[in-house]
Picture 1 (cartoon, rainbow, N blue to C red):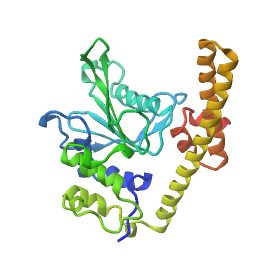
Picture 2: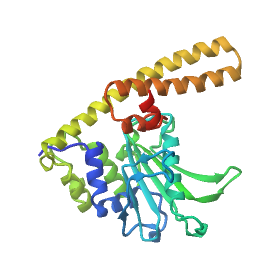
Picture 3: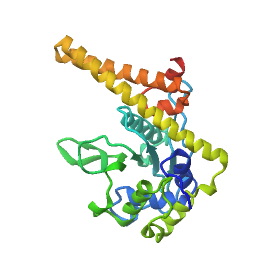
Length: 298
């Protein structure tokens, strides 16, 4: 049996965007629910395109978006590489989902929490842990929390099930994401023994996809490879330029401005290179801080 990787857009959305029972199991395993009554029992899929209130505002698309019986919203994204703009993108999308709950004149008490779950196939922190839970807290007393937005980032390359005493389903789902790919011929028995994981694995069988879908799958990985090369090259150039400008300025303010300008120029260079290679505007926007409108004007 041949399988595809669950990390690609095609497969990730098929597993978690078409099967409510699988996304329920996935969310319950990976979100920081501390009480049984917090767990999800039912979901309704929502439009993954977060359309702005006015046409002049920025549009955005997420991988999976759904809500439960309480009205809580859940945004799930698979990010293949880390960029400096990704946290801002996550905050932007979650905030848009949060404020879009109310119509004009609506009561703020009706607002329900938005959870943003982000699987990152890259590393971005120096901490050893792979699981990062962000909330809005009072800096002097972290027991004081403003409820409404919660952000979970998981660094997949750091996950090793042998070293963690996490929830069983959390380990199984992360093993599903990190261990199964095109080289897999036999799925570990402990994964197939679980009904949800077994069903998810079946969705990855290569025979379940058309030739056109398989071609799109290959193009996805080509785009990821191209984007990684462009980002890596532009990052090195920006760092060298920033160091040179910092030495010339010799002042903290000059260095800060140089870094800010260098970061923006880096995003422009990355977008120009990716655009020249024919990558879709939505893909370029996902890995830079630029909007599709800015990318179109380049």
